[in-house]
Amino acid sequence: MKYMLIMRDSQEAFEASKEIDFEEIINAMGAYNDSMTKAGVLAEAQGLAPAEDGFVVDFAGEKPIVTDGPYGETHELFNGFWIIEVSSKEEAIEWASRAPLGPGTKLEVREIPSFEATFADYADNEYVKKGIAEGL
Amino acid sequence: MSDIRRTVDAVWRIEGARIVATLARLTRDLGLAEDLAQEAIVDALSQWPESGVPQNAGAWLTAVAKRKAIDSWRRRERLDERYRTMARDLSEATDDEWQPIDDDVVRLVFTSCHPVLSRESQVALTLRVVAGLTTEEIARLLLVPIATVQQRIVRAKRTLSAAHVPFESPDPSEWTSRLAAVLGVVYLVFTEGYAATSGDRWIRTELANEAVRLGRVLAGLLPREPEVHGLLALMELQASRFAARVAPDGSPILLGDQDRSHWDRPRIERGRAALALSDELGRGRGSYAVQAAIAECHATAPSVGETDWERIVVLYEVLGRIAPSPVVELNRAVAISMATGPANALLIVDRLVSEGALRGSHLLPSVRGELLTRLGRVAEARAELFTAADLAGNERESAVLRAKATAL
Image 1 (cartoon, chains in turn cyan, yellow):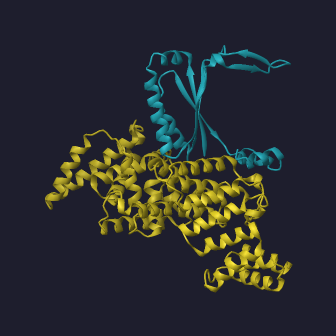
Image 2 (spheres, chains in turn blue, green):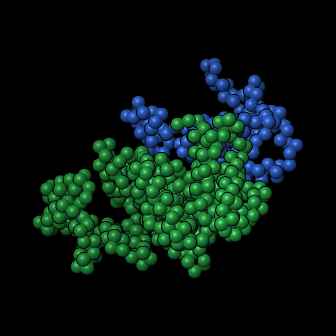
Image 3 (tube, one colour):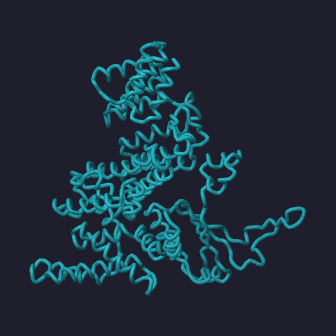
C-alpha cells in the first residue's frame, strides 16, 4: 500500500521555523528519511519552494485566473511530501507519527490506491489501461 | 482484529528486527530474544488499551522484554552462578537508552540465514524477525498453515541453540559465502512469489514485494556490497513484468509475447539505478548483477526483434563462468539462436543432451523442439515438443506445447 504524507504548515509554524538552527532541521529530517530508507519503505520525499513563489490557478470563471502566492484564505500551506510503501494503515500512522515536526504543523496522510483499484469499473478505458501499464 | 492488535503489528513490522537484534545481543541467544519479544507483545496487547501506545513503542517493548529476561535469570540464579552474572550484566545494560544499532540487525540477518538451518526455517525466521511479519501473515503468503510456520520458527530457534550459533556477523573468511546464503534466502522468497502461477496472483505479488523490501533493507545495512544492490536490481527488473506475464485466464505469457507497454516503468528505473550502484562500487559484477544486466537488456528493448541479443549472449557467457549451470547454458543457447540463428544454438543444446543434463525436465526438449522447428526439421521438432509436453508439470504449459506440436 502506498501513502502520501503531506506536510501542512501554518504561517506561524513557518515563521517559527526560521528561528531554529537550519542545520538541526536538516539533521532531524535526514535521520527520519534515513530510518525509512533503511526500513525499505521510502519511495520518494520532496520539499517545496516557498508559497510566495508559487501561484494559484482558479477555474471559477470562464477563463482560468492566475494569482500569485501565498494563497490568501489558506491557513495551512502544503510544503512537502513523502510517499511510503507499507503493509497497513497502522504502519503508515506509525511512520507519520515519527516525523520530526512541531506545533503548527500537521501531516495529512492519504492512501494512493493502485490505479487498477481506483478505476476497476473502467478497466476497458484506454487511458486506464495505459495508466496501469505505466505503473500508476 | 482489534485496533490495538493492528497497532502492535505495525510497531512489530517497523521495530521487530531492531528489538530482537538488541535483545539477542544482550542475551547472546536469538531464540530466547524472540521468545522474550513475544512475551513483551502479549504485555503490550493487555496494557496498551489502558495506558495508550507509548511514545517510543520499540523502546517500551525492549525494556519489558529485558526485564523478563532478568526476572527469569534471577529465579534461576540459585541453580546456576552463570545466570546471576547474566542478570547483573543485563540490569546494568537496561539503564542505557534504547539505541538500536545497525550492526545488531546485520547480525540478526546473518543468524536468521545461518547455514545450520534448513532453507524453510531460514525463510520463516527471516520473514518473522527481519521483515517483521506475523506468523499469520507468513502463513498466508507462503500458502501453508499457521501451525507449519510456527513449527518452522520453533525448529529454527532450537537448531540455533543446539548448534550454539553465536549471535555474530561472520568472519572475513566466511563473509562471502554467508552473504550469499542471506541473498539466497531473499531471492528464494522473491522467486516463490514470482514463479508461482498458481494461487492468488495478488498474494504472490505481495510475497515478491516483501522480498524487494528485504532487499532494500539489506541495501541500507550493507551499502558497500555490490551483490546486495545486484539482487535488488534483479528483483525490481523482474518484478516490472508482473502485470504482463499472466493472461486474464491465468495462463502464463512468455517474455516474447508479452505486451511491453504493460511493464512497470518506475520499477525498471529503480532496478537500473540499483544496478548502477552495484557497478559504481567498482568490484565487478556477481551473478545477481549479471542476471540483472540481462533483465535490463530485455527491460529496455522495445521488442524481441530490437533486443540486443549479442550482448545477452556475452552476459550469459559471463554468468556461465561465475555460476555455471545447465539452465544458464540453455538460456545462452536461446540467446545465441536469437543473435545468430538456430544452428549454433542446437550444437549447445545437443551437447547438453549428450551430457545428460536437465534429465526429466521439459526445458531441454521444448527448446530443442523450437530450434528444430526453426530449422525446418518438422518431424523431429514435433517429437521433441510432445516429449516436452509430457514432462511439463504445469497443465497450462503442457497444453501450450501440445498445441505447438500439433500445429506443425
